[in-house]
Structures are given as structure tokens and as C-alpha cells.
Amino acid sequence: MLAYQPDGIYITAVRYYSGEGGRGLWRLDPVTGASTEIPNVQAGWIEAFRNGIAWTDGGTIMPRRLLRMDLTSGTQDAWATVGDNAWIWFMGLDSHGYPLVTEFPIPLTSASPVLYVYTTATSGTPISNGSFKQLTISDSHGTWLAGEDGIYLLDTNDTLVKVSDVTGGTVAGGCN
Image (cartoon, rainbow, N blue to C red; front, top):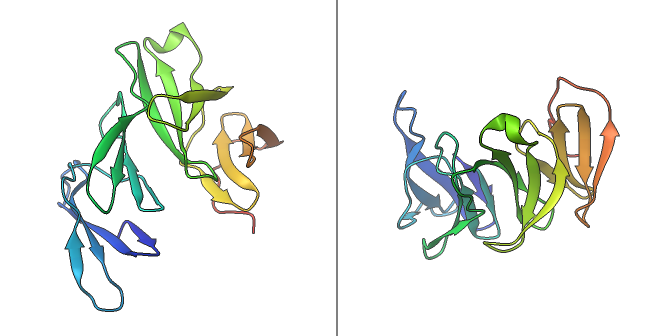
């Protein structure tokens, strides 16, 4: 299982020790047990689901784009595309469902990574310099991130606030 959403349970076929992520994507109706294959799904992991949209960086090493997939039609659009001088790390979704992407310069010593929120395929707004460790978790307060130097909250206005200096951990769940 990848995710439970209001329209069904999303599942993929994983090959044992393949290292390639999932193959295909299906929506399972929990009431009837019927499954519907989502068309045009590429190999790789789907990292986030929300509001009928799935997000993935394709499960590649040093990806250069984020894919947005409409779960009804299977259409895919490239978001957060960077050139040869950077690579991206998909961090998750903010509290509005927009993707958060950290862009890392190539070579890594040339500049600090930058966290962006993308509200359109080509429009990324910088949120912060620095590196974050994991996928985000959103709740009624905003979106939680674990940074190298502490825990942060990205509020519903996309303002990043450091809330703890504790390091070495990750965000385990929302604050409800």
C-alpha cells in the first residue's frame, strides 16, 4: 500500500530487491474490492498523494525534475525542473498541497541548498537556505520539517519558523 485517500487505497507492485521502486499504480475501492489501474505510470516510487494528485521524482539518484500525476487521467507534468547545475530532493507537500523541493547546487560546495515551494510547474518561491532531512508532515499548524540544526514549522502562510534546537531526530507525526 502506498496511500489511503478519500477515493480509494493506492497500491503498487514491488519487485523483491529490485531497487527500482514500484511498477504500475492501482486504486483499490475498499468497499467493493475492485481495482482500477492508473494509466501511464512510470517505474519508481510515488512520494506523496493529495487531492487526486501524486508526486514523484522518479526514484532516481540526483533527479532534475518532479513529476505531477493526475490520478484520474494519468497525465503527467514536469514541475521544479532544474538544469545541469543542480539536482532536487522532493521534501513533501506544504499545508496547501504544493510541493516543497530542496535544490542542491552542483558541485555541492558551490552554494547552500535552497528550499522552495512550487505553486505552479515553473514558479518556485525560495523559503530558506539549508538542508532538511526527510519528507514533511502537515497538520493544522502547518508543515513540519527536520533540519540539520533543529525542527521547523512552515506555517500556512509559508513562513518558516524554527521551533526547536534539538538535532539528530526526525518529525514523527503531526501535532494534533
